[in-house]
Length: 631
Image 1: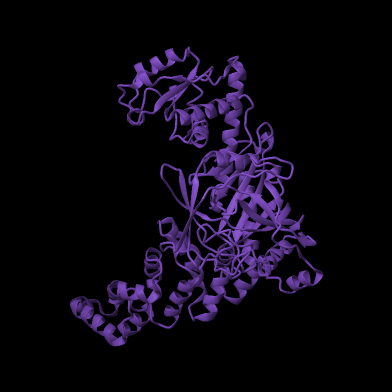
Image 2 (image 1 turned 90 degrees about the vertical axis):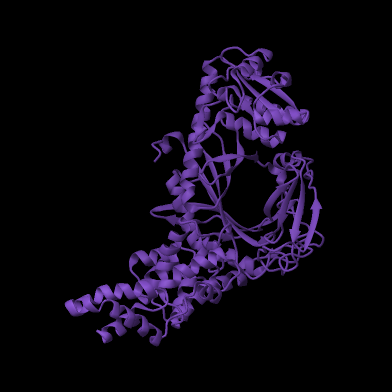
């Protein structure tokens, strides 16, 4: 747990919550919003280029992506993509069902709808959009929500198209594969004002917004359907945009680590000043040190030299001892330099003197490199092995980033890792990133449309909480867990459609599924239709409730299979009374002597023995009934 005084350092956080909408089709065409796992029916290869804005400006983040020099191989099938996704046909009219859902969420957050919806283009040339831009439109502005006793100001709610999904990288990172099945799925974006002042508060705000979105009953569930972007800053630091936090529980950790990183970067700046080093002393004077490593035992460098690549080095005046300084867990100053080198130089990484000798590099080789670049005590040295072009670009990026340590914290966009740490993603976008979409006419938000949405407003979380407890006799804990889960709508559909006890359904959809997820089961692989079918078989007596976990786990590991497939494969078909009697008679016979000695006192022991054999194939109630009759 962090001991940082967040108020003292001036921590400010703003959230951008993105979630896919379930409205039956994509945002600008009638294709199904589904992902496919089969081989693609269609592939096409493109390279995207940045364009100038009306003022002749090029967005820095777009230029950054272009500098990577990659081509994009797109994959599609005919069910989930058409000529619109392939950028071979203009987009169709805006999906008004999606507009209504976003408008519903906006009104639930006390926001003011705009008079007209204008679709804008947001430059994105990393390959995730075939067009080179993402379409987005503001639906409402202003507003507020209450989180505990605090009022959180809302800035805007928008409707945009989701991006294509990255599948892999080929040909030494020169070709990136994307599938366009996800491209165009309607996405709601909710933006808060930067009025969140602690990591825990950010997590609580995200929870409340997520609950409001689920209350609409029109959001998708599963892995990757909700993503949280965080805008984090401290008084003496900079605004950092962190992209792609998928787990709600990770938000506070990500912010804590970013605060730690910024504070450590400020300490590095202070230390450089104490050492009397100036930014101007860091120069792009690269020295070829390939000959030093002709007989090296370092595998990475050996492999590069065998390909006739070169090893270049650069001196970082005053950086000795700082390159290995930890900024956040398993991430150091050297990691900052390495991230820039990887992206701008297209290299696998860097070597620096704070981590030497290591990786098969000898102390003699390190000393030789230091002599050649004229490094003295107190200086750091970075060297890279790759093509001449790549090593020069990589070391230039290293020097540029090293110079930024004299600023303190550079503003940038970072991407999150599974452990909550972040890595450099790209520069912060500029104003040239947005421009009008000319293919889609503006759509008015009329008073009649707002009235229609207001008439059909969903039940609030507070009212639903009270009703669930009363209608389904759930305790307070279970009712809250259902509301906070992705399964609030599914819960009521199952209970109303089967005669399975509400508490059994609630416990499974919250506590059991969460436990299975912790155990490594990919719970998102089981869809709502399968879950409803599973409980339907229990309600009709085809399956015992004890078999639910086993069936669910099997379905998660065997995507595309049915509940009946699981029952047949696992041999979980229910015992008939006649079958059950045979099992019970056999167990009674085996334990005849014990029964004669203890009489009915052996009921519990016999019940356990029978259930151990028939668990998942017979209900405890039926076993108990027959066993009592026999005794």
